[in-house]
Length: 241
Image (cartoon, rainbow, N blue to C red; front, side, top):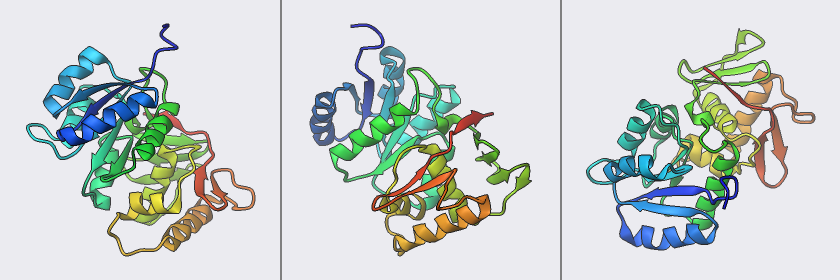
C-alpha cells in the first residue's frame, strides 16, 4: 500500500479501558489505523514512534492529563491535529484549549459516529504532516483577519468591535471552514453545555457578525445559512503568522 493509500493513523489516548476497548475497534471499522495509549506520557512517546495523523486525547487522565499533553506537543513544535475529549468544559476552558492548539473538542458521553465525523472533518482541513488551522496565531479570509492571541478582528485594515461571544463564535466558524455547524453544536462550543441559553442566542450573534463584517445573509461571502441545519463559514481560510 502506497503512502497516499494508507489509512489515516489515529492515536487514541484515554485511561478508561472500557472506552478504548470499544472505541478503537469502532474507529478501525471506520477505516482508520488505531494505536491506543492509556496516559499522556505514553502518548508522547508513541507520537514519535507512530507518527499519527490525528490524536484523540482525553482530558482527565492520571500521570499526565490531556491539556498538559497538548501543551507539550505544541511547545515542541508538533502540530499533529488533536481532538480533546472532555467531561466538563466551561466556555473559558474551551477557548483556552483552542488557543493552546486543540483542533476540536467533544463532550463525554458522545456517539462514536460523532467522533468519526469530527475526525474526518479535521483531516479534511489538513494534509498529512501539515499544520492545522489550530496552530495559527492569525486566521485570514480575504480582507478579514482574526488575531487569536490579541483577540482582535480586522476588516479592510480597520479593527471591528465585537462582543466576546461573537468573536469566539467567529473563531470557531473560521477554525471549521466549509463544515456545516448546527446551532446546538455552536451553542455547546461557545456558550457551554450547561449555559442557560437557547439556540436563538446563536442566531443573534450570527446577525451581529454579519452586521459587523458587512456580510449579507442573502448573498453571503463569509457566513452561509444552511436551512434546517445551521451555519457554515464559506470563505477560504488561510494561516498567517
